[in-house]
Length: 101
Length: 491
Image 1 (tube, rainbow over the protein chains, first blue to last red):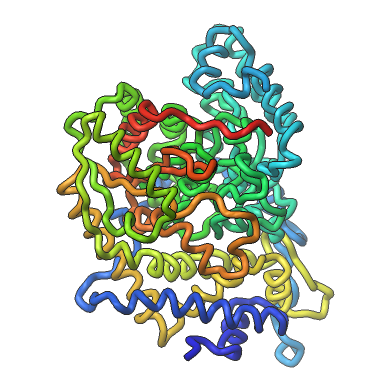
Image 2 (cartoon, chains in turn cyan, brown; image 1 turned 30 degrees about the vertical axis):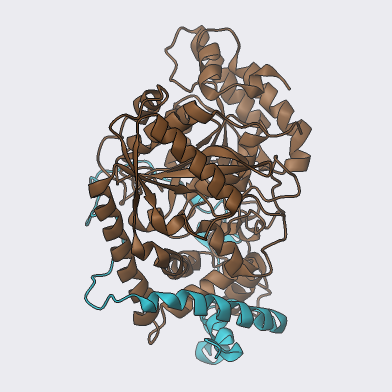
């Protein structure tokens, strides 16, 4: 049985903000199914009482000294932006028409 | 081939320091080599000739002024395109960052500059370091100098190929699941993954933040150790950087080169010497074990049963972290923006931008990660993988109570033909079967050339406890002293 359907892959693509094509959906559905069936092997390990590891370095709450250090100028920070205006990143509209009106 | 390009970094640095050659001459020799062979190898995505020659001139001026030079001053280095380089294009092998010139340097790049090394340019890689062959680069594959029809490993195939093609004596890579060690193995070069947190991730474009580890690549173990010493050490800009002194890996490499391993206990990982590896790989590995034994090492087999689940655990953890990390590529602050016609919403533009900017493997991993983190699947996938990670760490800890370091082949198979594994993504993942456990544990690992199989290089991996990077350099240098280095056919 397939671990994941074409419809589920389409849903994942939407969640992932990927405007995939119909052709890609066909390819990805098969490939993701193979990958998910393989990685599901982790379920064979008896680990109910085992604590999870998110990180190998036992450091928490690491902060630098609260001192002013040089940083990027607005021009440098915006230098790679696709669009900028008045020292800010310019973005496409966020609100839809009916909400905005 | 000019003498300067066939020298080790150690030799070049000595000649520059002694005034027998100049950093400019050395740099020009490597730029000439790149011009002569890189059309066929495609190790580089960007060659910064002007920047390299300027850096070389600065070293020569400092020497002329009588300044003391560092141990690698004047030595050229190739940098994987995953590290931010101020003013120099940084693409991560992706179309989504095409043309981006970072306004800052990664900490490692800054340390390379401070040490007087000369950055030649940026090397090719699988997009966002996701891959094992460099075929997933959006800018075309890199070719293995041993056989141009074959892959140079990945994701850092560009850095490894640049070394094997004598385009650079040193290179920087990054290792999330084997991306330094596996390219090292299949190109007959040395690649070391330091202890996680031993090298700074500041300015490293994030793929899987709990695993990503930048590290050194070279043609000899001592050169790798010298580069390791330059780039490693605590960085207050990386909250996971370990605030401890760097183990003396250079001294360890020199000790190993004496060829004496008396008193060193090595464990062969039983799970990795079964049917998983090609016969030619196993033959070279067995011969190397004999060589290590002859030098006085005590070699035993050690079972690490959970390692069998490292690959599936990794392919849940790394995609999960990537799906979160790559959310920053939204077409707002840097890189590509597609479909912004004044009518489309931010979300539509974002989806079109990511669709156009990411390649298939990156999309697959983002979607796998999104799936594994979804409510309803989280416990069975991501949560379970994190528990398996704990058990893998316990296997390492138990093993290191019995032995000083673990050894295995670096990769199950030698360089495969370009195109052989791209149709089935999971077949590609198997290239990292033996390298992944170390990443999940966080300890250091090194690949050192250990022989040839049907004319193609085989690597031996040494894995050591966290912050005992010096141990793996000692063993690797000893093996190198016994079996020598390997030179590919002339290009």
